[in-house]
Every structure is written in C-alpha cells, then in structure tokens.
Image 1: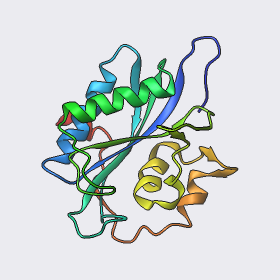
Image 2: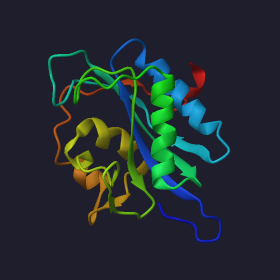
Image 3: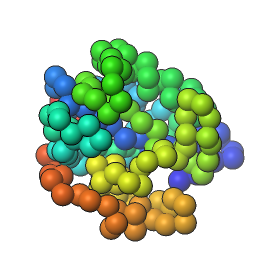
Length: 175
C-alpha cells in the first residue's frame, strides 16, 4: 500500500471499534460516510469481529473491523475527517481505553512513518493487538510493517476470545 505519485492518492488502513449503544451500526455509518466523501473511497472491509475489552477490561465486549481506503487527504486531514465522524456519531472521550460508541484509528497511511503530536503512523500499538491484527489480516495480510507482514505479527499475539460476528464483508453496506 503506497502513495501513487501520479494522482496523489494514498491507500490507508483504518481500525474501527465500539462497545456502547449499537457499535456495529455506528461503524457501518462511519464507513459509508467516508466512502461518500469525494476524497475517500472504501476499497476493502474486513469481517466483523466481537472482541474482549483490551487495556481496561471491566467493560462490555467490543465489535471491531478494519478497512482500507484510498484517499487524497493528508494524514492529518484524514485524522480530522475520522474525528469529525466520531463526533457526529456522538463519541465522547472520557477515559483511555474506556467504553465508546465509535473509535476510528488510522493504522497505516501508504508507506508514511510519522511521529507527530496528534498522529503516529503506523499506529504505535497495532502490532500488540489481536483485535486489530485479525481483521487487518482479512484485508492486508501481506502488508509489511517494520519488516514483517501483518500475518507474521498476528501469529505472535493473543486472539483468545475473539469471535467472528459477521463473516460477510459487506456487513457495513447492509445496515
């Protein structure tokens, strides 16, 4: 996944999740909102997973998915678009790793590596999280990250308790 020098279009991967209200519906609406923009196009979506909470474990199970998008937005503009969608979907940030209606993380953005104050690319903890790597492997198993494929990273993380909630990858278009 890289930047096309002729068109200025980049393929980025996103992680989506939530565990408050109807997170599956919120993720579906978020993906449709991104896809409906003139500067973003959803090109692949993983299966939908039901996952145990991570970090802060005294909360409900999450639903997680990953998506690949092509975009002409800069990384910061893509982040702002994702945050705007989170706000529109009533996301409130109260506590780190806490319950949420919707979370959209930029996992990768072409071959860009960046360590800015508001955005780190690739996502700094994605290689430690089964709930990210399992759905990401659905759409980008061969994607190289720090010299290793997503499949190789996935083989080393705990995926206990993660279940497929919807096998059909067009789940986001049906809701």
